Image (cartoon, rainbow, N blue to C red; front, side, top):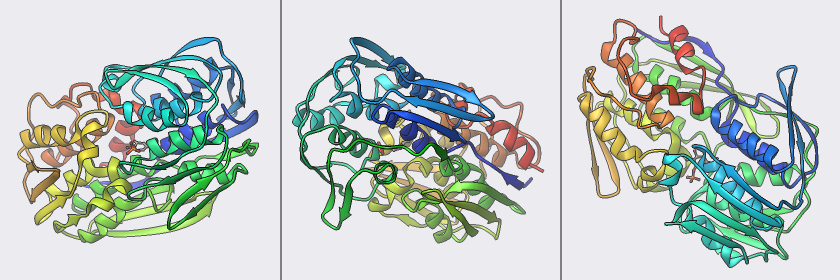
Length: 421
Ligand code: S3P
């Protein structure tokens, strides 16, 4: 069994959240092409509507009328499963007059929010978290810019501070311990803001954003990663992801696949404003294990589950160094991987802060597989079952909560069925 053909993943989730949520600072009408239908981005759209924005669908596009800066009396916002919605909203609402309660589902309630509240409080924000997480109460207040060194390389944390900084008095300066995805910086610049990056970090002045009237969202490289990595390990495969985001802060997993010996071709087709294009992966032979350094992790954090699955099929040891951030995603993905793939026979362990995988291992179907409500675990486990059965479709083996894949990739099962030949 191999994967054959082309696919177009849904629009990039990280960029989409930002385009939608930035409308809270930018009045005006945008026509957005390629906004994904996955639950997470819909959650951001609902939040913008609750805060006075207008959203409509027309000709396969989404029309967003941003409310711009304004006042709200008292409002509760449901961030569902989406950490990006909640953390970006924290930065956006900290300086917006009004009273806000932010809450989410059971998974979001377990995730740390205090580390976002901390720098925002230094800027003058009034925020209280419940036991370090949500529900969160924010009373919007005037803010001042700060100089802040991020304790972890987190794009969500960086974005919250930048979004608060856009509304603050004076300059905001940020240093990050390692580069993380830079969509917030790119959009601020693209929408006319003042943001400069140099080896010392970035500095930004408060600015009124001016969005373009038309925006096109490229395909989500993190969704594409599932079939691209699977093609590198399923003999005879050749798969092309079409029209996907190629921002270098997001393509870290491609470097790792290459390091493991995969055959891949990248074709840049445009920059609107971030680079996008096609990626083709052809099966070339067994992969080899490799080391992934701590500073590489932020650039592939969402791809660790599928890379770890690839590592179970590679010759020798693969070490993902310092995966602490993986433990606070939609599930504790480090334990989820060792438990669930371990049950299928994978040789995988956590040692200190590292994830270590030894291969190659013939995976076997196991009863009681569980996505733990984590969309990326659901897709990783489904592909593990494809590998485990190798010669026939995987339809009849259940993964608990598998439908949560729709949070980021509603058409995942259909695309898988089509690509499997
Ligand atoms: C995201 C940043 C990452 C990533 C998440 C989306 C973003 O989280 O895991 O899926 O859109 O900024 P951290 O920045 O917390 O690492």
